[in-house]
Image (tube, rainbow, N blue to C red; front, side, top):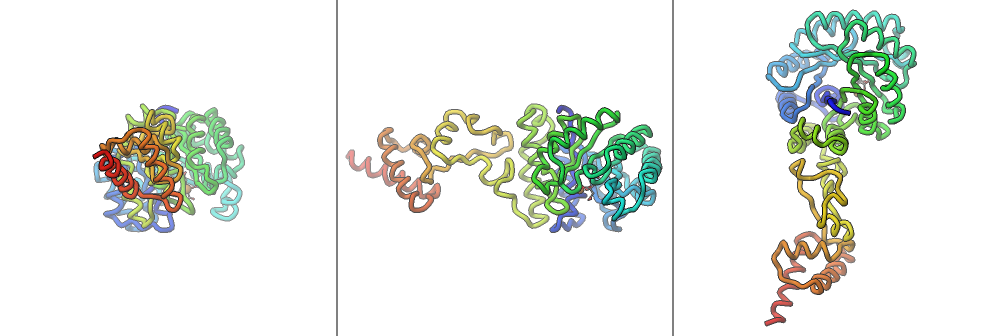
Length: 380
Ligand code: HCA
Ligand code: CU
């Protein structure tokens, strides 16, 4: 799993999110932030979608961003002609290959799919830009059909082929198997796109990389059709566990918060409480046993380091689950002079209060200060 790349699709898949409406300025801000964060590719809505989409695509191509700009189109010559006019660095082509899509969507057979794919790929390549071919709903497509399409497009020099779990039905083992098989059939790069309907989108992305995929589609906070796709932050968290040096070297990790906040504001949602890395409790430790060990060595209960993301660790000592070691650390931070026995005594008071109602950091500090005043005046 080295040398993988991100195709960031907040401005394409993300535009298909129920709450999304991005005006030009918002799109440019998001594109700038994603580029500064360091994603290799930014994918934009098809210029064939609307006139504004066409103009915005051109505008973003002219921003001089570090990331390469892609647009995402149907497998049609009309769309392809519009796409290359915008100045993009590459074009992502998609066509449905499952029996559902062939029956209820475009109604074309495999021979037709291959013929039109080859025509569009050759046209885009003739303009000297990258081209990717992807099959929509890959996991419910016939494997023989799928492989023969991929083999045909690989032969005409497509830069990447894509696998898409359009309905979010795939599991990590299926993903591993399909990508492995495909790895043996094509010599081009392999991109993967996973919807999160059954909660596997990050795990599937990871398994795809393990099996030899090279590019993963993400969106910020996972926004997309229905409940969306692999989240940018989730993939980053996963890859920081696997290969922190590579991941840290490539992406500006402390910027993740900014990118997420920008998108959350733009689509009027909040960052989920359990979001990897940036969820409000992602680095909060509560139980006394955990807090004690965290204070001795954070790695005991943290696989990711908050400081890598510009975040900080928080130890919650206002609950009934707290322990005297955690309280002692707060006492020392406040420079209150107390013996261990006194810390244990005041910890018992905190637990008593917390049995009635969880105590805020402020509440706890007050208890500590009052207790300390009591013992100092007792000494006088
Ligand atoms: C869709 C298309 C797509 C395309 C993925 C890809 C999907 O919105 O239905 O181009 O690889 O999930 O199949 O997002
Ligand atoms: Cu999708």
